[in-house]
Length: 211
Image 1 (tube, rainbow, N blue to C red):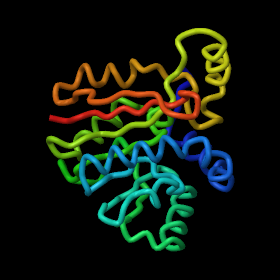
Image 2: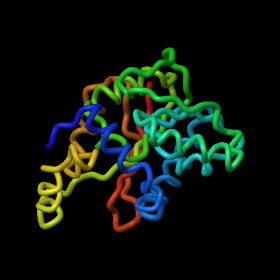
Image 3: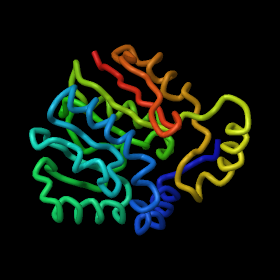
Image 4: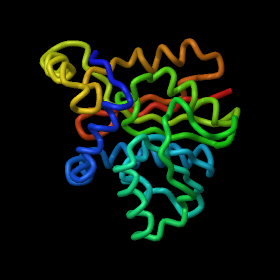
């Protein structure tokens, strides 16, 4: 897979920011709704990692208390505009933050949700380690992500796109073993749910319980 670094990701999403909602709202909406539902089933104090332009923020109910973080200031500016425009009182704060260095104490949240993030971050395992640190025992991590095909035309297309991953800002090739391998090596992590989502099963929901 193509290597990513924070500078490349931030640069890519500065380019994506003006058109991100137009390009991705419809395709990713089912996954965002599924992620929000799973997160709210696990608790009310929620960390949204990779909140981007805040497309899922209006989906959280008023009873939730949501803190969003993202590496891209350009994306967060649009999220802040959305919060102000839509009066989203459930959003407690939005901050620029590296997901591998979260500025929160241990066990600060009931649940963390990370929609479409794992194939974007340079260090998925380090990111999951840090997310797990800030989620309380008994809480959950909710992921939605594209999981790459094992073979066939889609795998070939993903491999071709993967050679341009740094320009895209994400890895089109992303095997389940990256997430599954982290769960296997993390004693307090258990896979509670894994299922394909619309459209066409392109994305996968994973709910990880933390002991």
